[in-house]
Every structure is written in C-alpha cells, then in structure tokens.
Image (cartoon, rainbow, N blue to C red):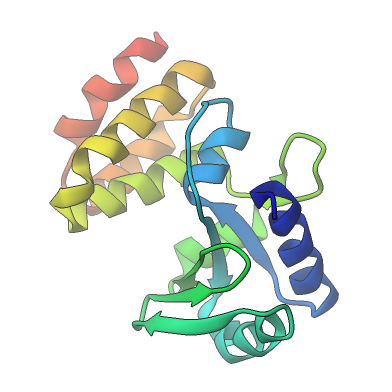
Length: 170
C-alpha cells in the first residue's frame, strides 16, 4: 500500500472517530515543501485520546509493538508512530494544524514542525544531523516566524545551534 493512501485512510478514520490529530515527521516535512524520504507515518494526538486512538487504529489492522509515555509505535500496513501531546504547547499544535496542500490532512505549521525537530535533536543527539538538516531545509523552503522558533529553541537552550540553520532564509 502506498504511504500517502494509508495516510489518507488513517486520518479519515481518526477524523470520523473525533480524535484530533496532526501530521508531523518526515511526511510533514514533505508537505512543507522539502523532498524527504520516509517509510513511516508520524501523527501527533492528545494524550487524553491515547486509548481511543489505539482502539480505532486497531480496526484498521494496527497493533502496538512499542510504547512509552510520550509515544506509541504501531505495526500495520505501514509503520505508524503516534506522539502524545501532553502539554498545552503541543496540544495547540494540533488545534492550529492546517490542511496540507489541499489534501485535507491536518499538518502542524512549519514553525511547530521545526519546534518538534528542535526537541528531537536536543533530547536525542543521535538524531541531531537529520533533524538539523530538516530544520535548515524547512527554513530555506518556507517563510518562517523566527520569534516562534526562538521560543522553541529557548525551551532547550539551543538557540545558538538553531540560528545558523535559519540564516539561509534571509
């Protein structure tokens, strides 16, 4: 099954079950104007909807294979990662998500996506090179709100690392 077709099927099922969600990760990078290979789907959901989402996705052939307090990894037609929105800031990412490129698929803003990339590399340095490359490419391909990105970077005290990645946007 093509990953985009599966993404449409997943988001329709979540929408029909009234489970707010937003696309993040590699596919969101792609929808934000940057060509990027990925073989999985990453969605952000409210932690309060965790159990309902697992049940709903189970009806589509998905099952949990790894779980933590911040994420659920599922096996199914394509690999699926659910990230849990536990704080107001991440819940607002879902609320503010906009349909990506006429697809009807809710996607976080470019600034929110960069914020998630900042969190990813700041909390797991093994991901640093890929995440920083994504940040730079997103900044090159989009008009961005640097003030919002600085707020994310300041949460992890990495503004000095992020600012040079945004310089290509001048």
